[in-house]
Image (cartoon, rainbow, N blue to C red; front, side, top):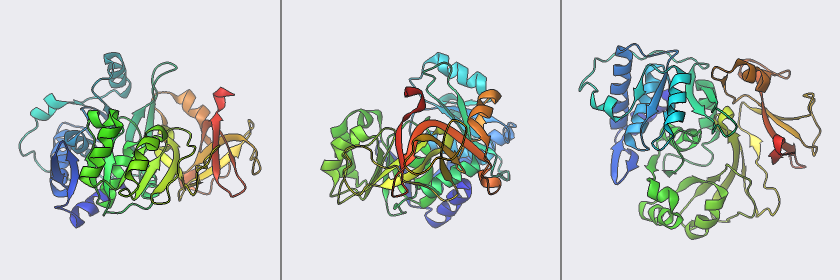
Length: 370
């Protein structure tokens, strides 16, 4: 599981920079110490298994240390960021029944040296991270992802990246992209540069930062990739693209992966290394180890290659929606093709796709757009 991977990374790369933000760095040993202090304090106040801790901090070193500390305590993490409407924040706090909301005021009251205690044992199906959907069609839904799903996402999204890579984090910590941009690099021993708001909004500023700081890999939506990729082909070793359909993006110098996933799959669970510029549909690849993708009709029958149907997933899937048992039962159904405990649940994505002649998954459109 992730925390075991992180502990191994701390042992192997203790004094290597783990995070860089606004010109200041923190190494793996320091990050481990800071997060443990937070965990000890939470546990001393009765926080642990079964709890969800809401984090209300801006992107940066403190937020990452708190995320790790909450997970070490045995509780699940739920991040809200500055700039969120207060109504949404209040809803999340109520919905999670959070006993603790960690902000800068909470951190200022942290004991200098809290009493060390043994961390709890983490089980595969313990909740690890709760991510809320946009709420564009009503109240946002809390998606509860387990340590099992998070560990599978980390393994799959390693792709061609290693401890020698320098990563760039641009997505909101409240999005499930945190699995790709934060947890995966920390499990490998890479260095993560956390982009400030100015970099996230200005493509040229982002390009300049990547050049100055030797960034070798990053995640990008396709619109941004089209702008920055031509300027960075001689520096980047890889780029992961996702969150929208990809067309006409290719480089013979950079490994570009078209990734597919959502909050309910703890981030990307398929990817395709783009081998040419596709003018229509760029494949989204094959599922990572431990997961299966099925194309099903409205009666959940398996469709043959080439036919369009709903993309349904087993393996790397969430536990369900927080406090929404009916919706959970509708979207997370028993998997009739299950081979064991790890793929007992089938998630119905509401996305339409097909398997092409090369056995690669292709995304077509949302089911509710038809």
